[in-house]
Image (cartoon, protein in one colour):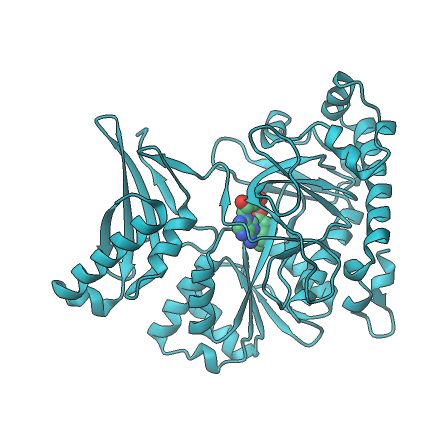
Length: 444
Ligand code: DLL
């Protein structure tokens, strides 16, 4: 399957021959064949998975159809922590050619391993993702995702090379140099977190760099949630089309799913990553269209197969076929995780709702933080947001007007009034990678 994607004479990648367009029946057959193989591989080689199967009286033969996947036990992040660093590996270390790790929020990182074949599959799906955005050989891709243990840098890098594009492995940081490279190298696509790009935009303005007039036409953003309001802000300010890329270390890294030029949901590379949506409370599978937790089974991973991995990311499958003609199913953009919700005075709040409310008000900038505190047992939420220099300098009238509009906009979306702290541009710390939006000081 992998070899079919290359045309040796041109040495390039041919998206039209990619499995993105397999007729549905053929795709399901590939999935079932691979599912049975991966379950057998994990059963033979991963003690934790085997014991969970045995507890349920299951063997690899119990999987006769794709629907049988629902019988299999889930895998969760704690399983990776409990077996740190390599207890879920299904091949000897001699077959593992790469390790990555994700820092996580508490304690030890989780470690993921890849065989040479796994790296090829990852490169292939990432190349298919870049092709979905309309990129090809001849494009110059500036990769500002962090290189290192984080999967973003190397994942995108191998994908861009596999596509046959020219990759500039600049990694994150040194924003002035990023802007110089965009201009001097004739960069056509830039990849990084959306929050880092928002920072690049403000630096471009300070330096008088006219991004809309530059060669840049595509932005590839992911690794953290970003709202449609943020997309509009980015597209207008930079004169580019901004596309979403999704992935997680436990499954492979970036390249689990991506938007196409329709910008309506993310296609999942389901010939390698089988998606399910479940009710996060009961664990029961939900029908297409209903919102729940995304669960993914890796269909071809050798080093670290993941069976029914609970991502904690909340989304739904879009039931209609995509106008682009790809048969790969789409999921709605991930706006939230089931574990990033906080409850304030009985109201469930997600950071993405606050972002949408803030960006709806003119005079605010896409740099904000949500600070949770506890005062005499009562939870308080403060939203700290930067406003433009013009608003800030006109301290009395403009500032109070923006404050009133913000309070209203937030109340309309989340249903409660929050405390607001409007600050000058550049007050809130910038990140080169994922941005921490919620600062929880309730247990300090
Ligand atoms: O963030 C992999 C990646 C790198 C994806 C570069 C895209 C681009 P982790 O560090 O393991 O891996 O974090 C995975 O980040 O479960 C989501 O909660 C979140 N996430 C990733 N992409 C998106 C996205 C990488 N496009 C976790 N939208 C995932 C929303 C995202 N959330």
